[in-house]
Image (tube, rainbow, N blue to C red; front, side, top):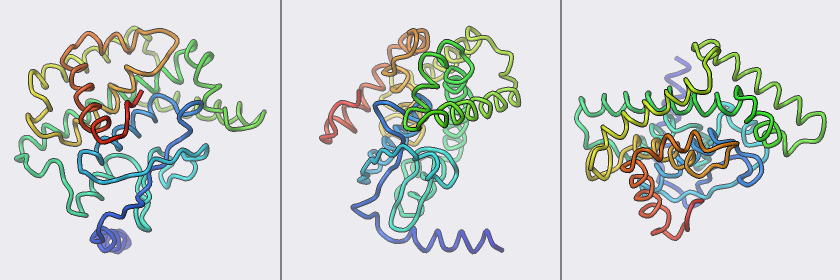
Length: 263
């Protein structure tokens, strides 16, 4: 009953038109945000650009703690707060904007399968690298994650997050993986995406869907994030059509709309 009532309220608010002051919240860009959250935020920004819906990006040190799900990014639209790409796609669809309405049922199932692949492989690899690879943890992750907070809180929060992610990795069978195995997974994921894209501009030919937004968010962020070495970005660079795909979306949905280059 409660769920039905909440859903009804969501539908009620979603019927209102998209406001000019819609806002997306993420962590501080320069010194704090980590690769995985940056990718998630960019995927949502790309999706909203593709829907032609204006959004203002606001960076807050405590964005993760402001989010209803504890996940970043989240959007504030009217008096609704929605976090993560999946729920945001549903929320936007209820407002009458969809990128995948033109797909048939088989294509929709395929789109979902590839989105699962990206989340299960690329996102998990990003989290592994950030929190389980000792070099990255020591040189990048702890300092960035704890940067807005005073000592000793900066260390406490970083260790707490690391413990959470490591527990998740164990639960999904990634606990004992080596960095080389993780990079091999990334390569296989990129290979599958590259084959599916082929010579098309987008995954389902001429029009982008939420899959394109998700893939762009992750690949573009991997390509433009400085890590302890280039092993991760090199995996993406092996696929020229994926590079062209990222450039196409950056150009069309960010540069051409006066957003400037993303990197």
